[in-house]
Length: 443
Ligand SMILES: *[C@@H]1O[C@H](CO)[C@@H](O)[C@H](O)[C@H]1NC(C)=O
Ligand SMILES: [Fe+2]
Image (cartoon, rainbow, N blue to C red):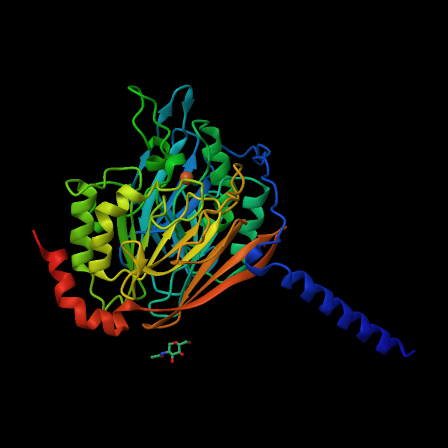
C-alpha cells in the first residue's frame, strides 16, 4: 500500500477514536476525576534585597494602573518608571504608598503600591519598580469592545494551579477577574509570598482584579481581625469607587461596569456594603457601560453538595438590588467545580435575571467538589467537577461569548460555550426599567 494511504488511514482512525473518547463524556459524566495536587514548593531564589518581587498590577480609576510589589530593605522607594519602549522610561510616578504588616512571628517585606497614568488604551507599557531590577511590561485594556476577561476562582498554588495559569496565559485576555480564594496561605504567611512569585508572570502583565474568599480571612478570635495580609498585598481601587473598604468596590472599563462584592463582610440591609452597592448600581449608566457584571465568592445558585446554601443569606439581602439594576452575569467561586445557570431570579427562571456561573476550580490543594444534588434544579444548565477557567469575550454592546475551559490532565479543553445577550439591550429591561430603578433610587 502507498505510504500516504497508510498515513491517511492512521489519521482517520485516530480522529475516530479520539471522537469516541470525547463523546463518552457528555457533560463530563464519565470523565475520571483527577486527584488534588500538593502545594508547589518554590525554590528560594536569592535576589538583592531591594530588587522588586511579587510584582502585580490592577486597574485604578480611568486610564490608571496600580503597580504593587515587595522589597526587603530599608531604602527602596515607591516609584515606578515607565514608557512605551523597552528600557526607555519617559514617565515616572511616585504617587502611592508603602506598607507592611506583622502576623504572629512573620514580618512582611515592604509592600509598595504606586499608581501610574494616564495611560493610553490597548498599549504595551514597559516598567521598572523602585528604580532598579528587572523590567516588566503590561498591556492596557482596549477603550472599546471587544474586551476579554479571564475568570478563575480558588486558585491556590498547586501543580493544577500552574497548568491552569499556563492555559490562561495562552489565551488573549485583557483583564483577569478572581472571585476569591487566592493563595490558600491559611495563616502561613510565607505562602502569600510564594503565591506572589507564582502569579507574577501573569499578574505583572495584565491587570488582576480580585475579591476576597474565606481563605483570605485568616482571623484569630480576639487577637487578629481578618484580611490583614490580603488587604496589605492585594490593594484594589475601593477609594476610587467610593467604597469604604478594600473588601468591596467597583470599576469600569471599555463599556463594562464590574462590581466586586464581599461574601465575608457585612451585607445586610443596614450594612456599609449594602448602602454602597445600592448607590454604585444607581450610578451605572447603561449607555456608557451596557454590560454589568458582579463577582462574589460564595455562589447564590449552587447545586453542588459542597457549601450548599452558604450564599443564601447574602442572596436574600442583595439579589433584589442586582435584579433592579439588570445585572447580566454573577461570577462566583468557593465550590470547587463548574456550574452555569439560565437567567434566574428568586430561585426561578426569569428572563430579566442574571446568569450565575461558579468557577471555583482554579486548582487549589483541597481538590474537587464531586457530588451534585439530584435532581438537577431547573435553572442549572451545565455542571461538572473539573479544574479549569472561564473566558468572557464581550464582542459588542449586545453580545458576549462565555466559554469554560477544562484543565483536562493539564490540557486545556473548551467544554462549555454560550452566547449571552446583554440585558440592557433586551425588551424586558427597557419596559421594566422605570419601575426597577425606583428600588435603587429609594432612600
Ligand atoms: C455583535 O456581535 C455579534 C456576534 O459577533 C454579531 O452577530 C452582531 O451583529 C454584533 N452586533 C453589532 C451591533 O455589531
Ligand atoms: Fe472558598
